Image (cartoon, rainbow, N blue to C red; front, top):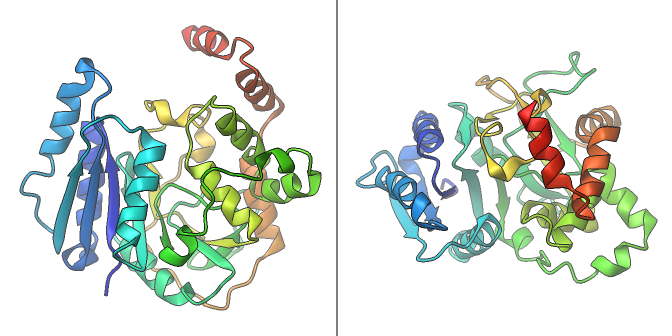
Length: 309
């Protein structure tokens, strides 16, 4: 039994087209159900693009079944993902999730399904990630291997219903953890951007389901499984409003389609954990940018000024 694929699309026609082409190159598509959640336009200017994206799924072939869910009002990414994944996981015990600016390697579904099977009974595993950043100092590691990280990721990922249903999307303990250095430090094991991002989300400076998903994993001391070589590439970083602060070359990877050996008994490797953290840790300039945005200190003006140069 293949896990269903849950896809979130909006108005990006070309990246959606490329994403679908890469996904259809995965042999498991023919045995996989596809759930497509299509957000509605925010205004009349976006309506044509939204309709063009939806048209890509008219009479689409190559999947076991296709379930389209066009929204009647604009929900935004966070609400779309939370509601969509919740709905699918009421019918299935696991799920593979993609967005409309990701392309995948031909063995992406092979890896995700195999990893979901291998780790479903390991209570310390929260999710599976198809995306892996290029990290420094790990060239000697087996490129066909896997490793664990203390950060749930959102660029091509998978999980199980029993993990998803434990998430507190309201983050009811937020005010308490603001005063708890140990909890904040534990959260930032996956990168010192994490608690800062949660601060911005809780203060409504950004809209993010992913940081709340990552925080829930951290609070439960769970791990995410990564392939050593990435099976997902984000092709929307430079043009997307959803990835502000992610536009630099550090996050760009080449797709690797080689087979991956899944060790169901894999344990955390401190060197790999630290290399992963180092990749995500913010520079001083980025920390200043986060602070300005959190406290509304002319962040948008400064960003526009820098883009003009």
